[in-house]
Image (cartoon, rainbow, N blue to C red):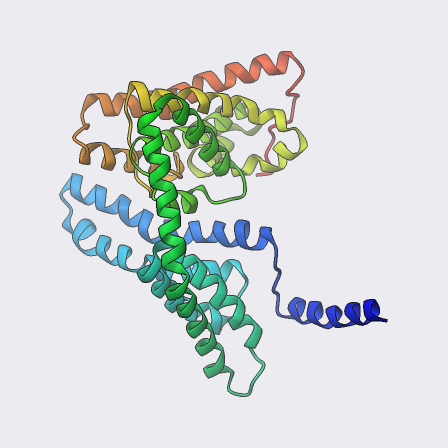
Length: 352
């Protein structure tokens, strides 16, 4: 009786959550929501950074003095709306999430913005269209819940993530070879997985030598997959993966995980080269982006020049680590694996 009663009690709850489009799962929060968080970051802070760099280098004050400060200030709001959109929130919740994201970002950085947006959106979805004064209740609940979470939990979680990021950066300075490999491989693989490497690096505040290794790893995945799959996907696939995302290969990786070996091996090579030979540095905004929109390269330029390492060595390092080695070495490894039968014809074909 008690077991039957328990099942009967769970059924209405599950039915209610389904009706409200609330799915409590790793996929919904750590994949869907974080992926859209990255889009929010790209549409505000990252694109603003690019325009700020261009404005500063080309002498266009409108880009660096007008657009850049606005993009930076609107980052939290963009994250809030992006996360709510990723959670398929209704309009009132979606628009109110601009407030929760902004509050969370102000109180706890990107982590605070993410948490405030997720909790605010989900609770907003629960009360949405449940009362006759929906236009008041729904945005009010969304904002109150989100801001509370952002103010209470955001700072602590944000501080924890920052501490982890600082630990990684410190460890990289102590052990540049080993950490160069680990950071490059791990962040590069996260970039290819349906998880946001950009959001992760922003949350960790990954910069310095660790940021340089992370950028190299992301470039190895993107350029590597783009070039090694050129025969199957042509110029469209080259651009989609090389300037867009290597995440497009996830369905193929599921079918044959061995196709992931070549770019990952290259990341293990370029990572320590970045930390030991070229001493490349990166920014939290660029370290998880690779060659996507050349954000990784803009971040590298910004970090290197800020550290007084600009000049010919920086440009040579970018060219060799971010483009030449992945473009040359990845297909060589892939061809060896093809001869071994590990990679077969069509394994890298995209549905473009």
